[in-house]
Amino acid sequence: MTTATLFNYSYSPQDPRHTGPAPAGLRRIVIVGGGTAGWMTALILARAFISRGVAITVLESPAVPTIGVGEGSTPWLRGFFDMLGIEEAEWMPACHATYKCGITFAGWSTRPGFTSYFHPFASMLDNLTMRQFVHNVEARARGVDLHAHPDRFFVATRLAREHRAPKAPEAFPFDIWHGYHFDAVLLGKFLQRKALERGVHYHSCHVTHATLDERGDIAAVNTREGDVHGADVFVDCSGFAALLIEKALHTPYVSFAGNLFNDAAVALPTPMDDRVPCETVSTALRYGWAWQIPLTSRFGNGYVYSSRFCDAAGAERELREHLGLLEADVEVRHLKMRCGRLKQHWNRNCLAVGLSQGFIEPLEATALLFIQQTATTFAEFLEQGDFGEEAHGRFNGIMNAHFEGIRDYIVTHYKTNTRTDTEYWRANAANLDLSDELKKLYSMWMTGQSIVPPLREQLLGRGYPVFSWFALMAGMGVFPDPANLRPPVAQEARYRMAEIDDLISRSAGNFPDHKHTLAQIPPRRHAPALQAYFW
Image 1: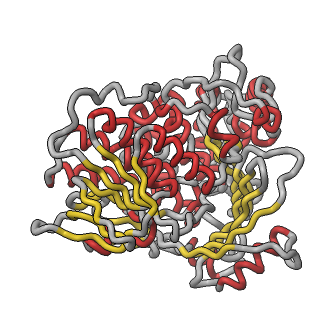
Image 2 (image 1 turned 30 degrees about the vertical axis):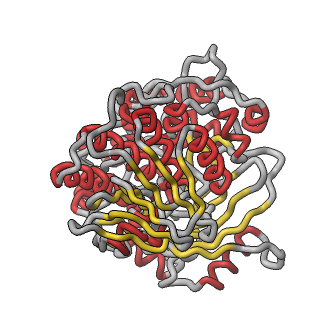
């Protein structure tokens, strides 16, 4: 799916591309599982099909709690709400949401001058500084002594540092795409309410198993309460339980444990400060990393770690120590994770969405992105009315490439770390279980070759644009020979950092205080597609 496909939505209750009768053979869709995955999927499918006579029903168990700690997003979530015509002023206060300009990565690298960096979200203003950033980074990779740390090149970084909201007044015609922080439990409840308003049916019940027909498709799902629900299409949003896609259809699972070691997390809340940040902070600890996510009501904190190197008690103790809460009586939550993906996200007449289809650890907050892309792409395939093997193959190819591209980007954070304080970090740096694409990208970078052409064409580094890869590699201080830098010649030093600093400073001055903006969220501002920002 292209950037334009997800971002160029304009609101109407029904997707204007989808009119007329529903595709043949599509009359009932049953979604097993609620939460964010189930209700996001219901809203996306409802927009395309409810007005055309397709019944959409969500079966949600009151006995299965929402995980509720995935509290950050990418900018794609903005496109989701814009598509549905839901204003920030409606959903953000209801979910204790804040704006997110990007992510600070602290302590992942020990290289002097590169122990912390900020991964910004894209901005129209980046067109004014992107060329300078890429030029300096590529020159640095060739051994030229130029400033190449990403933090001075992007306005979103300055907004995060100054606690400014990425919401400029109308008079300042430069949009910044932004993500959000939110209470995941409240978001699920909000999406449920909007889905019910838009015609989705709901049953509070506990699905126990599925019944297959003579062809091997799912004919119906059965509940503990004794009800039987049949449908033409079933959507499995049952989380890691994968009740339909794995337990009923035995769909093969591809583990990412060989290159993503983390499989557990511990989380706890802390009070909010007087100033509300607009960034996620990811701090490397001994056996993983700690997140800090600001909501209007509290901070969400957690520690993602590998149980191969650290037990749950040790992880909790380290997180409490990190937060200064060793003696505090604050309840924590322990969670287990499984990183990987299904071989087939769409198998027979069942689609898996959310944790049931796969999971990549939350370092880049991509969980909602996977939900959104999977459900949106599936709606487009249903619209074509082709439910055959060829369509299944194309769909699963798209989803698998998306998972693997984002996996590679996240693996790179670990592979490029220079910490040596624990075996966990040493093992990550030494890990050779990398995809062929990532090996090629890393080889090109370390030999001074430009990775811009293959990134632009998405031949390498799929799922992330040029500036994201450059921010990661340069932010971590990954350069071929950093000890032998030569002074730049005039042509190489043609961009003055003082001018870039001035441009960023003057641009950031147009954006308001974050906390003040949250108190009076402005009306929705339709933004252009993001391709131009990706350079």
